[in-house]
Image (cartoon, rainbow, N blue to C red; front, top):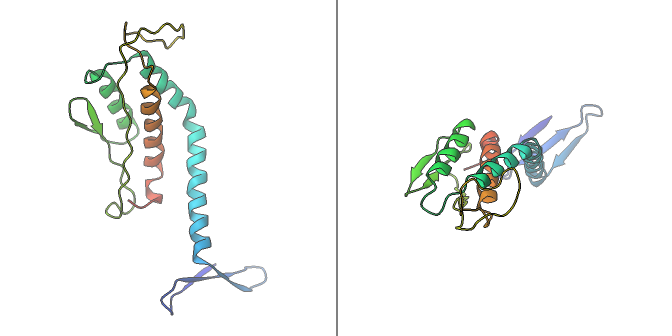
Amino acid sequence: MLISDDRFGIAKFVYIDPVTLESKHINTFVILWLTIMSLLNTIKSLSEKYSQQVVELRRHLHANPELSYEEFNTVKYVAQQLRSFGIEPTEVATTGLLAEIKGKNPTKRTIALRADMDALPIVEKNSFPYKSKNPGVMHACGHDVHTSSLLGTAKILNEVKDQFEG
């Protein structure tokens, strides 16, 4: 049992051991640390759960590269994925997306994450099943990884949004 004691303007917590009925003071930092560790463990678990899906997203993006300011199909695909996660994106600029995930106190802080989606005008000479289907265009730059990683991050953050500020 935790009991809050705020008589001196400093939040203090007392733990009552249910077996011995002894009381022990718990530092507020310890409670904060336990809360953060719980969230980090949840995020780690969700990362493991969704890792194969992120690989599949990356392979789709790799097989369907588009040059800068021509990523119209990529934007549609990414928007579709975000919607499937319960996140409503907004189209910005020519071929950009903005997706907001609001935590339990959205006015408290904001963190921005971004990823590039464009590919390069390079002929892919690999023989992977997810090789570029667009002749002369390839994700040789890693933007397919950026985009799929950010999609995975968005999915996870949306699932834990009630556990963080902002």
